[in-house]
Length: 288
Image 1: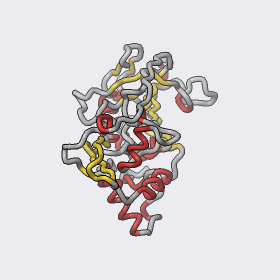
Image 2 (image 1 turned 135 degrees about the vertical axis):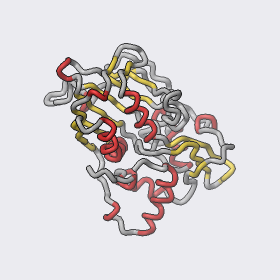
Image 3 (image 1 turned 60 degrees about the horizontal axis):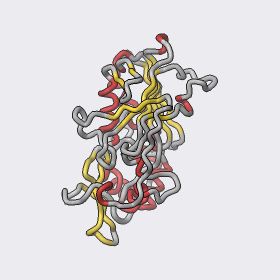
């Protein structure tokens, strides 16, 4: 992957959704008077999941150390971790960035928070509803035949920023285009969450429940850096940045699942390009 991947390399699925929604209620820096999304909206929120029996254990990121590592609603970002299965695998790591679409204006973020879509709800915009543990499905499955990273240290980056893990702006104001007096604020801080994840892991890291401890990421010899869908977009945008953080002695490879990346050279419609810049880059101030 080249080091100058831009935010314009989001998956086509997200691109089309954003393009179709352009035209009203897009985000801008808030005046400071609006309520955060969890305070402004009274729709039903998900039931808090308290299941702690799954193999990957949660680490809530420290807002004292990383004050910008925020979910959309201002709750701290999170990762889920599992230690290597044996000493031989202790320097091998698997990172996976969770997928889950995104939002970019009043209506799409309203629907996402309130669960008005078939797939997502406020649990993808906050860690207040997330479980203390999660399963090891897919590439993280230790029992999957042929999974050469099954025994490695696992880091699952929870997706709660709705920005393809790439945003770097707080207090984005979303106004109802039909009633500009109505709206809410939210944070688009996916890149800040990624910085906090990597920064935290550079030292020995223990799960919130104390049951799992990872060695320092600074000792890694090999990392597989992956993501699915919106997480794939974030993984692609962060791959070279991540490699710089861990240093030249660590072999870093990327796997991007369930995304097709459209290079800017393949888009020649100036209207789409203008909409893209106005409604994405300006909203998210994205990591590139």
